[in-house]
Amino acid sequence: DLFEFFETLWDGKWLISAFVALATLIGFGYSQVAQPKYDVSVPFRVNVYSVLSQQICESNNQNQKDWRASDCLADGTLGYFVERLGGGWSLDSKGNAITFSTPTPSAVNAYEDVLSNALTSTNEALRSEAISELASIESISNDNVLATERVATNMLNAKRVIHSIDNGQSAITFGSVSVVKSSPKVPLMLALSVVLGGMIGVFFILVRNAITKRKEQ
Image 1 (spheres, rainbow, N blue to C red):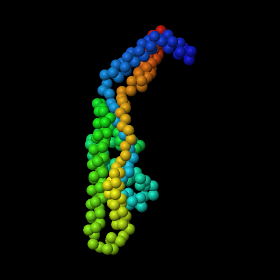
Image 2 (image 1 turned 180 degrees about the horizontal axis):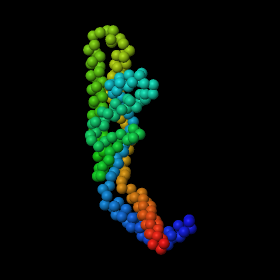
Image 3 (image 1 turned 90 degrees about the vertical axis):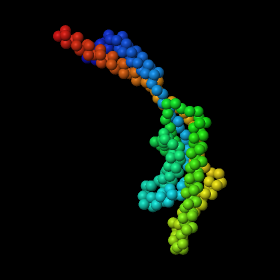
Image 4 (image 1 turned 45 degrees about the horizontal axis):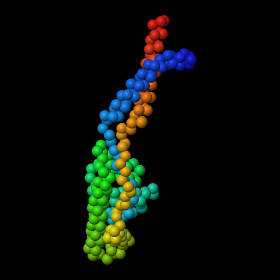
């Protein structure tokens, strides 16, 4: 019965406490020797969209009712940027920050320099792409093609990109760089160790009690 169950646990309270203490000690020891992991996170906002992305996203927007053009446009610029950042960097699950995981974090200003260099290269790439698009349009000799809405839109987008970058606007604006230790999380590990130790202790007491009763019978 329930009273007997709790009485059994109370009789074995010191043994259960010993399991809890042992599990906590093991968890704490592991937290001290485990290699730490740090997450570098940088929030951002996309300001300038690549010409190619604008063409692709406008086409997709016409063919798909639920298409989110803003996400599509941002992904195009971010693709240029992440490629220039190098390995290890990626977008977080929400798509509003660039993250990087490392066991040996650098100083915040070192990450700011990396972001700045990649941003400069991205601005140059977007501007070069827009200039190439204008040159391609200007090479068209067919007046009927030049008069189409699509060509006019592409030319306007290319000129807008060049104008924005030439006037000092960056393709992406960043927030503050944050470096946070993501693992091991000592409080959480200790809490789990206590729970696990208690469960093992309770299980051991119940099994021992069942064996004792069977022997008596």
